[in-house]
Image (tube, rainbow, N blue to C red; front, side, top):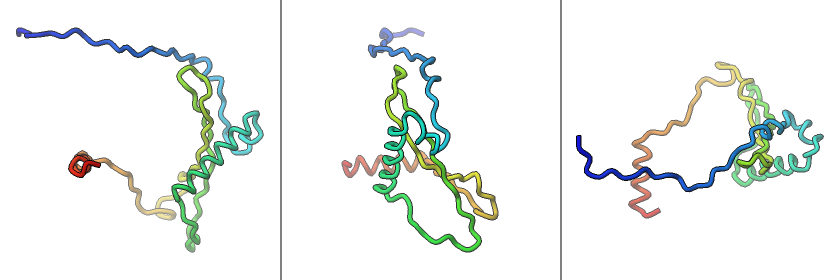
Length: 135
């Protein structure tokens, strides 16, 4: 096999940032709301909680309704995570309110489950529409 023209390999010109993995293990995130608001970073965690609640309100993610007879309510809990930059410095504090879906029982609290699945043909159709209408 004869190659007509072989180009040299390209090398990345990005500066590499080394990560100090020792610093990553020093960050201990709270495991409960009470632990977060009584920690030394309580101000930052409360701000993260307020940001999450504000985002939920802006995005209109829930609707308050009456619980149907015989249905069990699904609880929720706060999950806290300290986000670090590549150098191991604290970038921000993040709080998420998550449902305790693991408390549900099949056949009692739900009958079917659904998972969003991406299909290549659907993506191609959407991208064709985006191109056609110059979106």
